[in-house]
Image 1 (cartoon, one colour):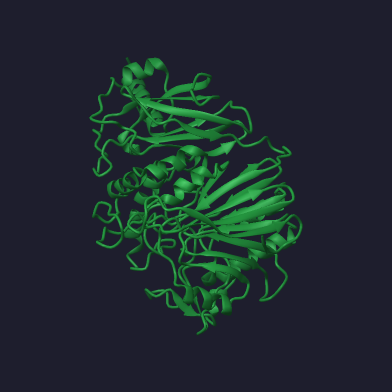
Image 2 (cartoon, one colour):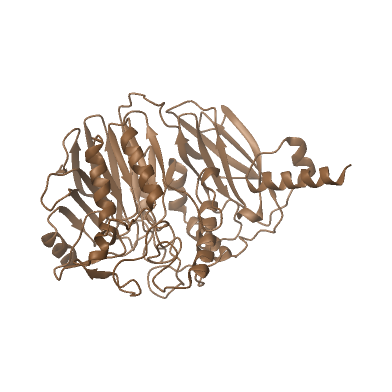
Length: 513
């Protein structure tokens, strides 16, 4: 055989493995012997995501030991089978195949299934080396333009392992959502401490091996696994998937940009490996395009934006480790500075101009509303540090006459509900609902109460209760329920409806339900 041909063939084969591409049965036989695994390999569970009318992404990552840096696996590739069926018992299998899980991708698997029927449930599982994964349930999106009657979304953020148990996820599963939206801080990168109710392995997550280990540890939680297995997910990161309060090429410790971007590249790779994302989002070094839209017939469009990767340097005293800056700081209102970057902002305005949906959700990481402290300061870690980006979004909704814009958020460890307008006390353009945190600790009643007095556009606030948000959508109304745990320090905490709101079709501004 010609050596150049053999070399090209080997390179193509390696490229197919790295891209997660399925190979023919003959190629499987010659490529990899049947790998023997030391233990049950599905300890990170299964997941699905990115639903389209004809398909979804199916995900798993082989993990035999969540505490080990190598997940308890050898570097050898592992053959993984998958199947998806129209019934929970997997009797009516409609698609099946095999892929390789390779060490270079953290032994993760991303299967992009196509050829499914729109707007219906499916069940799936994986097999490897004689082991079978749990069975997961997913669903496809409705056809474009379909007259959909309803949609239920559960959304959350901020699930610091040490701070509490994942009882919120257990109750989220019982709510039986069609789609789960997670808005950041899926993991926390810092070293373990003696505080809190449980402890993860002690290292700081700052390179690829330690980020992989942190995800494996979080994903071993049975309630989180159940939430992943009940419905498709749409995800967006925040800061702790990389480093606290990072933006662009820096975090609060102001490291050399080249050094930080090396860390960001490792974090983004680990994020991709551990989420049910399409190959089109696969990172290249420290870059990963994650902003995108997801449509649910004519009823709803979810637009997910990334306010971490592309933002300008922090405004006003950028070298400070403190978040609060004077509200009068001119730099924060400089129209040349962007929270999203010029390219993403242009893309976002194009989505506003073209959306066909009755309800238009903006999924983003934090609190969009301006919050000024009694001593006239704001945070430069969020939208208040980039006030003109927020203004351009509000103007875009107004100028493009976007139907029923609603903002979903996280990050701040509080439940907040409020209206968004261009001027203080002005006519609402959109409503905003921040869905608390799954476990991460929030603010005192006194602090939240003071925030609401100074910022009356925020109609509801609770920083003491952990939980998540639920959206029940119809053609006539968007109903949002804040679901609060009685005590996130208990593994089986009960949940209650903390507050309910409604936004009526064609009428901007929230109302208490």
